[in-house]
Image (cartoon, rainbow, N blue to C red; front, side, top):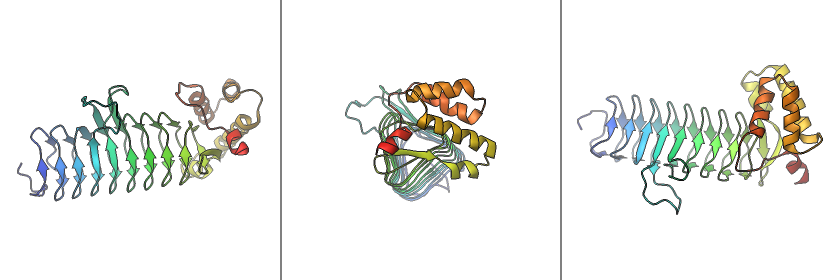
Length: 267
């Protein structure tokens, strides 16, 4: 392949589809089923393999391994996929695996995400837009991470967990249950400690909306009935879109239980 933007030491397998303006640094490897869209930059010593598609202007840094087979003993060599959106930053030593047949066959990442050094995204994970996973954070198989989520360094997200939009997980935290939108999770065993108020303010959320969210959180924490019953009651009373997003998340389908304010008080 004659392209002055691809270093002569790069191995590009026949069949790979690479836009004309893609930059690939020394000693990188591009597999035969890879698709690299316009503006992608691959630094030196990167492996991109498998049925992997990488969107425009995404940058992948040295020693990342993108699109390797799942770390799942049930995987038996089936063809599965990885799709990464636009303008993502994938830093050094990041690993992102393709999906599994049992999990739908696709690992997907949206746009404008940042994966810091050493972070890991496992098979069949769905990550939406503007997500940040800090250094050595790990997301296990089948998780769903919604928009604007931040996962702190050295934190681990258990398989099948959902994290709602705008939530933040503190550093060195193990999350084994679903996290409501705009939730603040911290402590080694992952407790729901309130709302991500700083994140809401940075996003320019109006004061009235934040007040409504605070009131809803207090009802979830202290109201009568089960957690789901409290959420349903809030949903019947609210007209606020932010509060409603929490309600819909709680009442939606999930393979896990929820982190609740009770977990923090009882911890």
